Length: 371
Image (cartoon, rainbow, N blue to C red; front, side, top):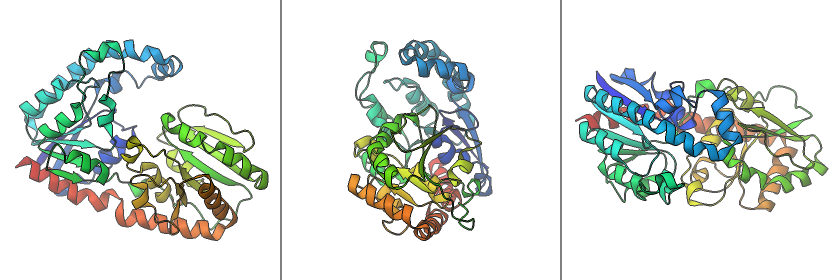
């Protein structure tokens, strides 16, 4: 039995999409390939950020996050030093992103020195995080090429999309694509057999930092609200969002337990993005969740969105306000089109983006790295 240690940045139940979709969804499947997976999350998330009072404090007073990080950094380092010792008992170590959020890769390099069979996994353009120091505490420890240095030192790389693969190939020739995937059993399809509801829900789910892209569409939503008073916007995230002036808004605080059920009650999924390098590095997790719930989707034609969405078949790619307006109007006006797109969307996930579809490829990479 091949023993694999996954070092993640999230606590054991995998709250972050990256940890859930790229690690936890595979845990029950890997033993079928004679692989024993073990997850070791960062101590900072296990013993610190999981407490709501601390999360609330940091959200309400953002400047406090820097002294907090300075205080918990020794705890994080201690936890990872223990992981490094444990790594001696594993055939392969998968390092999901970097282990310590400072711009010097000492801990990560020590891990690779102790166990050279390291796979570096990433699903965002995280190399942009280290372009410049964010505060005076980290200025003296900064390495602009930290992620590149780790990619170069690792035995193999698993990247979430072609854009990330292309960047990683500048540092390492052994780069595999493992797309971010869905455990489709967690998502029930939108029920199109029910009578058509008078209300139509435009749904958005995501992290708080991506809300500004949605806010850019608010003037368009308000224009639509005049003609379509039965259309409402529903947002699922961690903070109370800004309200449009005219379109009704429903807010639901995100939780792991409720997210799949909430998405299934949307009528149209939304994923606006800016055309930036960071956005091009994204792996379309939001679209995958919408598609798994058999929803039609409208998204910006940025990065991997263009390969997941087949324009006019399972969703629309909208590049400007006029295209967003026309796409929304078509889907609002036609329950038949929403159902057709939704059925095609679910099939796209079943054929291309499930953990069952990709677990064999992951197992092959793990076994090859162990040799």
